[in-house]
Amino acid sequence: MSKRIITINRMYGSNGRIIGKALAEEMGIGFYDRELIEMASSKKQVPLSQFAEVDEKRPSPWGFPIDSELQLGVDRYPIPMNDVLFGIQREIILSLSDQEDCVIVGRCANNILTDHALKVFIYAPFEDRVQTVMKRLDREEKSARKLVKRMDKERRAYFEFFTDQKWLDMGQYDLCIDSSKFSQEEVVKILKEAAMKK
Image (cartoon, rainbow, N blue to C red):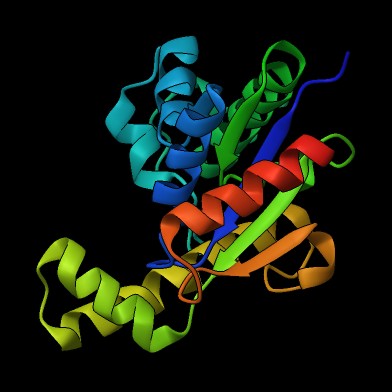
């Protein structure tokens, strides 16, 4: 029997992570976001801080430090830590999809699990996301605006680098929701109903 998997890609400040966690709790299933970095760190005995630094970021085109034996390929050619982490997280995501029902946030999971997942994209207007970040992180408006722009840019670059797909191509998702139009409870209800039909 195939597992019930929900992948969530999200714009920064759209509350995608919070919604994903609430959905997992509502459905009584696993939730994986930062947990994937922790699992990768444990699996390969790499300090969590090293993986956290490159999580959901594309490799730098200007070179990178070699901090681990894992970064040397079979031909001893150096590999960016971003690529190493992506490969490990890909293995973990594929393994999880075979083992349990779960919600997976980010990490190109919608592209990795092409067939048997409900693929969701959560977004909201820029101004709404700025206000959310200001409240959540207690930031000034100018700082929040910069952060939202930077995080969206990083997520887009990461996704497009590792998938060769456009992050905002809504055709690759089963469901796209503007989280500013509904309460969190309403979004969770919509996603739960969609997941049960998948």
